[in-house]
Length: 483
Image (cartoon, rainbow, N blue to C red; front, side, top):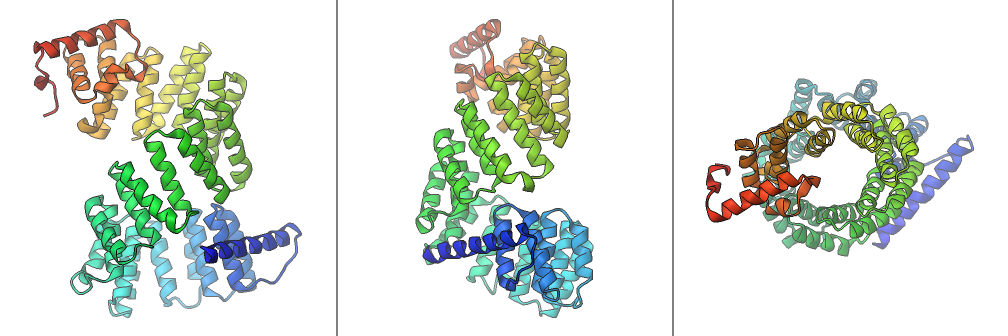
């Protein structure tokens, strides 16, 4: 802990010195390792642009250093500048250097030049005699590039001879997690922890598995162990905040988020997550405060999509406060930065409905659907807003699209909404019965609490009648349930 803290303080002192030089427009000598620490500091704090500037300065001082040039390639990739990274690689003198070849393959995979990546990696593997190290490096590269089956092919030759090797086991558990075989991943992680219970990464991987399995209590236990080793581990705190959000403990999630802002003040997502908690707690001024803070701290490093998301979220807060003018101004800014932001259109539809502009609301919700893609949350809200706009056929179509997207089992939590859509379009027999029976059997809480804001007295009366007939056995639930 002391070594970690002193290392962080050293990086911060270097950053202060570097920024003073930049601010004053002068040149100053830095050791190459110092500039790499400055670049890493910016990257770790979500500032890839400033990281690139530090690396460019390092390249001026040390133009022949290969590590600096490769770090510049990595920074370019993080900014979506893959072709520029390839041009930089082409300019390097030793094209057969291992790290140069590996970076070339990385860039090729990033740019989807798969055949060229395969050619480079096969040449590299043959050069190193298909050693364990090179095969694992290649396997992890493919895994990190979202190609788990290709990764498995490269690692497979190692499984028999190195079954107890820690690095091979680490690949196996990362592969298991990536392919959603969480039980296998948990078994491998626990084997690692039996050997070394102080490895934070394993506790965090364990927490991720339990979060994916929707087991927040187990995830909290793993996160607590990680924090016992390092109480300021940013990833552990991010996972802790996620767990609180999953169980709808918004106040506790918000408290963790505030701590995260203190540790990593350039993390764009943290400000938005804290603001989202404040919105759920109906503390709209607090939400606006943290969004304003995020814009002050992170604006230079934000992408246009980030900016659109921030202004859209702030627009919703102003809408909930009843500040129409500021809401509209923020919506305009949001769509200026990203005209395809579906959430901005949803808020715009709400804004129009609040202002009595049903025509504007209909146009906004249609745009929201156009850009929603395969987003479950968006499609659900599109259906609800179509209902609010009186476009019942469109609401039913959106609900049907949602069912097709996520499948029957996951759609069960929306059966009450689908039943209401069927009711609204006039299908008060088979369509309505199919989904209201499913809702009563599979998700009774959605029925008892009148989910999705349904307050149609005739619909609610019919729901109670169906429930009564089910209890008496006059309707056979099995006729309507999933096969």
